[in-house]
Image (tube, rainbow, N blue to C red; front, side, top):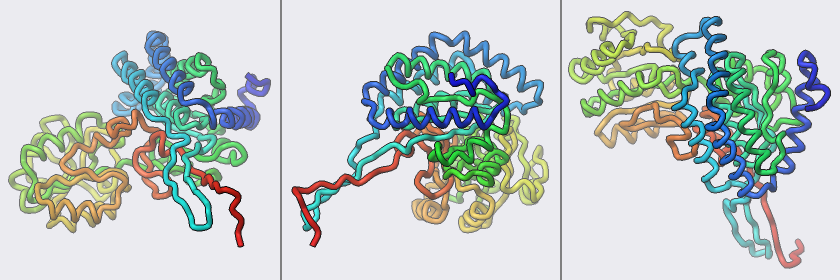
Length: 425
């Protein structure tokens, strides 16, 4: 640990030190053998499980901090680590370790009449800065994905997850050490001071891309202040549209799961759109099931006749609740549903429930979201469920990465051009 790191009040010095060491580590990781990276992740997974009591003890401190801070039930759920969740963290690390190494993959190659053989080869981005809130498991996911893709990473977790993130970070460092890789490859900002976030956003000499993972306030701050390129992860304002040709059983189980499985994740359904022709059949059944599950349904005028609903206001459209609340309204047809999503959505994840292939095709063509679901719970909007092992976030922008950001999405490419002494006329 550098001398500047001892003074946790000197934020510029701390961050410059982290950046300098990350840049040096990135130079080594760019050509680190795939076997070494996989071994580091396997060792980190073992460390998580071996040190689980220590991690849970650290998490208990964060939960106490969260309660004192008045965090919502959904946010407390995001913060919570259990032995079962730590088993999932370890399994996620092993899954990433087992994936093909993306660095060096030949994306395309071709020959030219001028004698050139050209290859487009996958390369690391360099240094990634990850800023996140509440969820300590992001420490493991982000650290592992950056390592797998040959990137050094600077992690800045939320103040409420400080102890848990520190404990998980120590396991990642154990893995790096065991595999003989630079320990500076995965660094955690050691202070809760918010000034560290602003400093990280301006470190153009050291950081190649910023990945924010959190609520509207965090993402808005990053987009306003960042001088480093950003993979935007906006709110999960997730819509589920029940088409007139929806299967009743499918609609019931998918909507219930999409809203209630875990209300605090970005893939949780926040708005239900119901085709006018099925309001009195499928619509009634789905809304009653949500109410019976303890969900507060904020309904438009057409749905307020259903006992137990509460009137929606204009503030309920385009809102991410992250709680046991859902907005619901009737739409005249599919085009009105699509128009509503275009106006109020965040281009994160949206779903259609229908057995009509023409309606499905129309929805897929016209809904411009990073993830479009068909007859599937939106809770599957997750890199792990997509087979990526884990994700660093879900990018809702359109530049470079979109949707779940896994190891492949954390790479760029270079052109490797070869010939037998070709010269240009």
